[in-house]
Amino acid sequence: MPSAEIITIGTEILLGEIVDTNTRYISRKLRGQGIDLFRQTTVGDNIERIAQAIRNSLPNTDIIITTGGLGPTIDDPTRQAVAFAVGVQNEFREELWEQVQERHLRYGRTPTENNKRQAYVPQGAIAIENPVGTAPAFIVETKNCSIIALPGVPREMEHLMENEVIPYLRKRLNLRAVIKARVIHTSGVGESQIDDRIGDLEQLGNPTVGLAAHSGRVDIRITAKAETEGEAKAMIEDIEKKVQDRLGDWIFGTEKETLEQAALSHLESKDWSLGVVESGLDGELIHRLASVNGTFLGGKLLTKRLNSDNLVGILATYRKSSGADVVLGVSLHYGSERQSILLAVITPSGDRQVPLSYGGPPGNASTWAVNQALDLLRKL
Image (cartoon, rainbow, N blue to C red; front, side, top):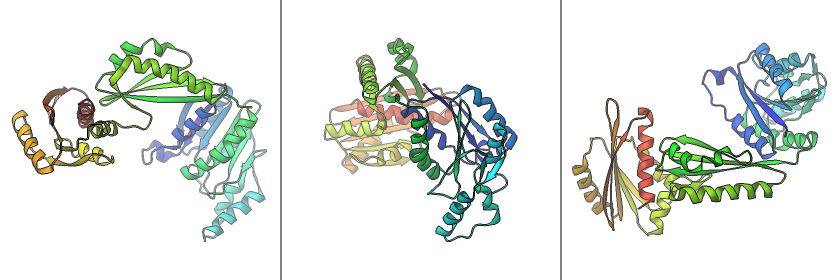
């Protein structure tokens, strides 16, 4: 299968001033075409460093996609860097200059002289018109590789990727295979416990199975390569069935399903409404539940530390005032080495208290506690 590398260009990304979302989008698009992504690189606005990154990639990959650095200013170096990397000069294209002028006039602006930089591309490049922005893109073909330079503005990049780059790659590389993936979400269990049950599946070559641990939950990704979407889907479904059989109710959903959605759906199936009381979570539990349409009636945010006695008393009072069928209380207290967490819930079928201890990074304690609380709700 063909391989690709992505080079993200921008000093502002290296400095943490903006977040690179382009790489994720491009990666998923390439995956959908059966293209393996081998490496992702971020380089600042420096011609020589960008050129060197391209030179490093050329012998090893079929596709290099760059994003960013196609603007009109001096610190937009991608055109010069690509030309430098392949040993050619940049050349002026009159038709690109006409496109740049037309785009500016459409936005009610007059292009300045430095906008002419955007009409230059490496000699022999395939120019790509940008109908949603002012920066044309381009493709430079070498003997073994296509270097595709795209704008850094996400809306522009996505449009060109979908409408120009993918059709180009399918034709040039005669693409037939696809890569499909499915993510299974679990909660209330650790990564090592999951690995203990499905470790043999993680050794497969195709489909592949991998784990990704988060604070209070673990994701399982199944990825399959095949000649058609139907074949890839069937391969994934076979492995997914094995994962479900082995993990049971540790699984709460797939893909974009969230733990809060799973918890509220479970309560809705019982026709139970929910109210919550939280302390030490900075409103995270209330916020996540409020983001879901469901049976959540509201919450109460307390600033004082709660113990088992006063938390249960507060929950009982709040249940009467709110009219909720189920009330959940979560109290998080930060210690010097470990964080102590108390969960308490009152339901029509009984009460329950769960004391927990968290020894991970303190900054993740709140999210971990919320996920434990939501896991408790979905298993009532």
